Length: 494
Image 1 (cartoon, rainbow, N blue to C red):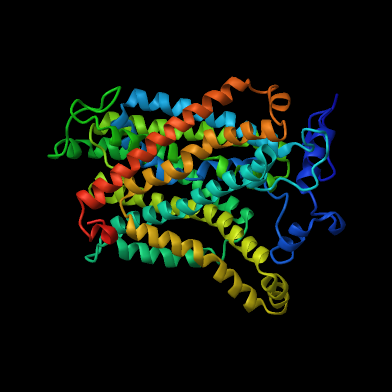
Image 2: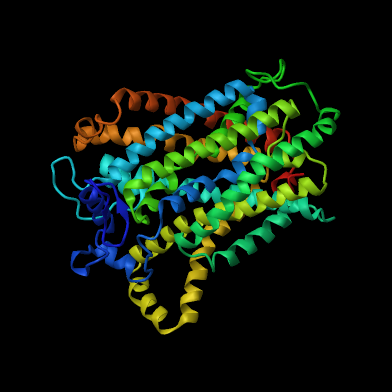
């Protein structure tokens, strides 16, 4: 039995040609024929042509690997020191296993060509909202799409904050108010988004981003821990060595523990771009393995950053850990790496939310749908201007929130509690429950890959986890900005 070759030269194992080709054809959907296009997709494609079937296996893996990683890596020492380095490691492994199950659920639903009754789908599954609709009808669409967009808007806020914090450290100017640097980073990213417009552009950057985060995590951070641990341990704030379970006695605050847990969960969010990346892949059947590979990469990088940081620096550790280092050459280099990787994360989130903003405007405004495409064809300048306008709302929202909540730990904990934890655990399974009653989707179709008990456990765990993180993030916000902060903290993080 010899390997077979598809029309475009892709080599596949013998016997899987039909399976792979069917998956690709289903995801191509209405792209090849206007006569098969629905009104919604004709409307979308009329003004913003998509680059379909461009991403390979490694493109997808690298983009997942760099998604939200730059901010998570520098928060891992805080998480491992606050939660206890053994407990944090166990929680990291447990959460990655949960994400693997949810990733497979999302991939299986997206790649299906027929519904529960055997009827072929007439539209491709291109967004997480589409997956939600297949699982739980309109309610499922609204839930998953809303939380996906909320997370991606929030990603822009966290990355803008991290870029401003890192470049503030590097520059060390007298006007060291974080708010000014945030404004500067806002202007920079608006300009960058005029150049990087499609996923293929970001895939190219993702290879560089993966290299940056690997060097930073596996080489530069442990090196910095070894060099600066003496200075950190001799500071008045040093309490003692990190413990295997929980923080040192007397420092086990429940809300600090919740913020440490948020730091772990923040960096493991493949669900938010998985569906969109699958829609762009040459071979969509590889999406699960690519995302699983990224999850294993997450686990390795985060375990190294967290364990070495907690064991070598002790307790307490700030988040991001880079702010603890004396301002010297190595520390400056690490902050530059964080800054560059944060730009790639920002772009990944902006590509999705800006596309959503364009689609929404063309859906609700017949005038825009009929007028703008014609003017774009007539004038390149007009086309560039329209693209510029569409990139502004998400960046302006990120700027406002970041100026109001400049503390990285508090901002991350709020984002995780309200957008990430539920979306990766209980929301997909709740949509599945709803679909069992509404469309009878689930038991017959999904029992072949994972027992239903796993989904039940994930639902209960996700609900409890999300409630705990919401309480902790709200308490931290009140404690930082209302009970213990000044008005200047809302702009400069004074």
